[in-house]
Length: 328
Image (cartoon, rainbow, N blue to C red; front, side, top):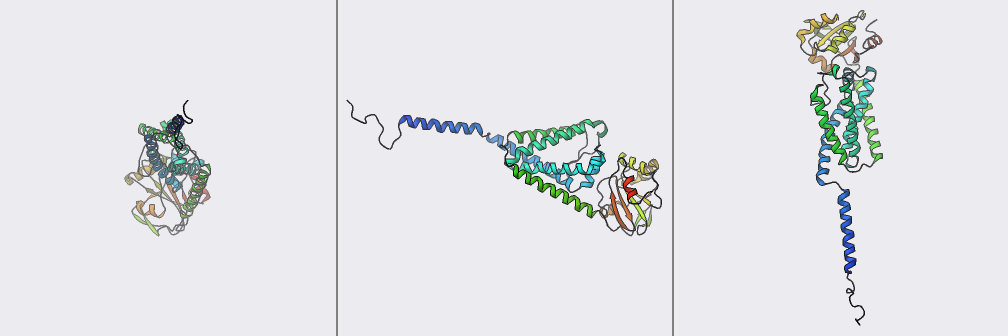
């Protein structure tokens, strides 16, 4: 008969069966962890895609927030109803900035990627629906990158769609709704304060005592003036000038300021019917009145800027010009 305790492991040591069970449990946990965690290369790809998208969306969103009037004009030229151009610019600027900011935070990255993807789909759908009217027009959304509506535009957005999908699918699980809400509040407040500051800065500016119009000194100190910044090759400018030619300007004097190709200014005025003098002082006037993009107007009364005029669709600028007392 074997002695008691024979076949048992020495005290303080695990039995073979217990050891095997522990090892199996540890390996199972490791396999589960490997299955739950994405591969290193997937995490790296998500990070790179998120970083690139964040750079693009932050630059685009902040550009809109800090230049609302200019972007409102671009939206109007892209066939967005003019009444929605300013709120649309603010909404887009906030959404794009939020997408860029969320992409920078690992636990919020997936939400930022989905927001970026949704915005890209909206952009591509809008330009596809209006392709015939917008083909060849400038659609630059990034300060350093010039693009026009055409096949290349859709190819570029398709690349960004792929980046957004990679950033979303291989990002960690999203969490932190409170943090995202606080970020949205901060971006929205910044956008509204920035727009208010822009509006204040664009009124009350002192005009130069005189400019050059048709080759002669032209005083701006007394009376009512409308300075019209235009591009002779711009059809939107031509349409605006044609509609303004039918207004009763009374004693208001109109000065047309070409932003490019001034040699075609007289031909432009003849074809549009707008009666105006031509000034080639664009370089100095654009800095004084914070010119954004053509067409662009400035109401000057008794030597000071009364208001910028940036709306040129539908009832505008006639409604604003009447409100400012420049036309009857």
